[in-house]
Every structure is written in C-alpha cells, then in structure tokens.
Amino acid sequence: MLIALKEVSKTYKMGEVSVKALDQTSFMIDKGECVAIVGPSGSGKTTLLDIIGCLSRPTSGDYLLQGQAVQDLSDAELARTRNKKIGFIFQTFHLLGRNTALVNVSLPLFYAGHAREERLGRAETALSTVGLADRIHHRPNQLSGGQQQRVAIARALVNDPEIILADEPTGNLDSKSGQEIMKLLLDLNKKGQTLILITHDRDLAERTERTLTIKDGRIVDDIRR
Ligand SMILES: Nc1ncnc2c1ncn2[C@@H]1O[C@H](COP(=O)(O)OP(=O)(O)OP(=O)(O)O)[C@@H](O)[C@H]1O
Ligand SMILES: [Mg+2]
Image (cartoon, rainbow, N blue to C red; front, top):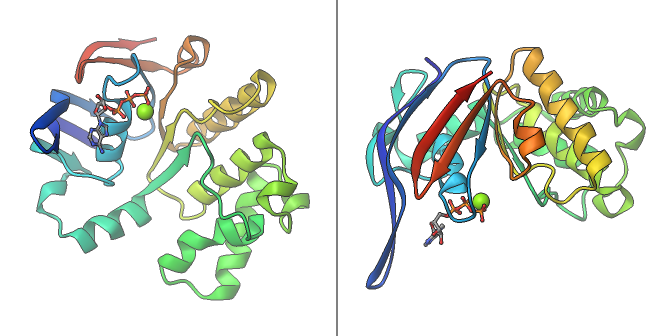
C-alpha cells in the first residue's frame, strides 16, 4: 500500500474559532493509481492533498506513506520525504519568475544535494519529456500558461517522485491547454507514476480510473471505473 489514511482529521484553530477541514477521513491508494478528488469549495480537498504531500500533518488519525507513519517523522525528515517522494503541481504554477525554465526545473535537485552538471542534465531531460526541449532558456513570462504548467510538471518529475499531486492543474488554463495538460498527466500515470489530482471539472475527473468525492471534510463517494 502506497498511501493509507486512517481516521485522519485536521482542525484549523484561529483564536476562538476552529474549522474542522477533515473529519475522520479513511482511504487507501495503491502504487500506480490515478485518482481524482472532487467536491465543493471549502470541502477540504487542498487540506487533504497537503497532508498526503507531507506539507502538513493531521491533527489526529494515522497517515502511512509506504508503511511509514508520517506523524513519527521530525520536521526535517518530513521535508526530506516530501522532496524525495512527492511532486507538486499547483493551479498557479508557482515558478520563479526571474529564472529560466531550466533553472526552475533543476531546483528540487539542488535541494536534494545533486551536483550542478547532473541537475542541469536531468532538468533538460524532464523538459524534453513535457515537450519543451526548445524552451529551456525561456523565463515564465516568455511562456504561455500551458507551457508554464508544463515547466511545473517537469519540476514535479525531475526527482522521479513516487507520487504526483496536482491541485487544480488546469484551473488557470483555457480548455485546449487544459486538455493537453490532462493528457500529459495521464500519460505519466500510464508509465507508472501514481497521480492524485484535484479538479472542479467533472469531464476531467471522469478520465481518471477512480474518483473520491469529499464533502464537509468526509469522503462521501469512492467510484472506480
Ligand atoms: N490555513 C488555514 N487556516 C484556517 N482555516 C483554513 C486553512 N486552510 C483551509 N482552511 C479552512 O478549511 C476548510 C477546507 O479548506 P480547503 O482549502 O481544504 O478547501 P478546498 O476543498 O480545497 O476548497 P477550494 O475548492 O475552494 O480550493 C475551509 O473551510 C477553509 O476555510
Ligand atoms: Mg483547494
């Protein structure tokens, strides 16, 4: 089992007010699965993805990543796990505006401690994989939205992570670029990468083999096609 959540809850406390964003959520995801997470705004999707991606910890319950209890890891171990095992893709790309595509994609390898030559070589390969071999020296503002998201995908891939997590990856793209990005993600999944993506787009969600529906912090539906 790649991912196992057991009665995971997450409560955000803000002064007197507390919000239960996840409420005793339990499910498992196997290596190689392709899963869409859908649900209304505020239902807990991003909170859930952040926990799966080791960006935050559950308030209660257990999260096992490849059998390892994430709550037992120190902050440094959590960060290392995230860098090694998880590739993140965001709606708004999160690229560094002053750096070229090549440098943006090579950054996770820098944090993982690889030498410069290896970083640039692997970044170039990842950019080729997403069809941007001829744009490696472009900066984000010299690229289209779809191309910027491809750079972000290359950055997510460059460490060869176990899991790719995408939070509304097509949310800022026109429908044609969105379709292309979705195809790219599904192709990566076919090659063996586990893919978990949040989407508001029912058509995109239906192209995955499994859809988890979340409402008020609880999984209310789990469909396999
Ligand atoms: N850092 C935070 N501090 C306090 N409350 C938060 C925080 N992050 C999220 N919340 C609250 O937790 C609930 C779930 O938020 P979350 O971002 O997971 O929803 P979502 O399903 O991703 O929504 P959307 O589709 O709008 O992105 C919401 O009620 C939100 O207001
Ligand atoms: Mg969200």
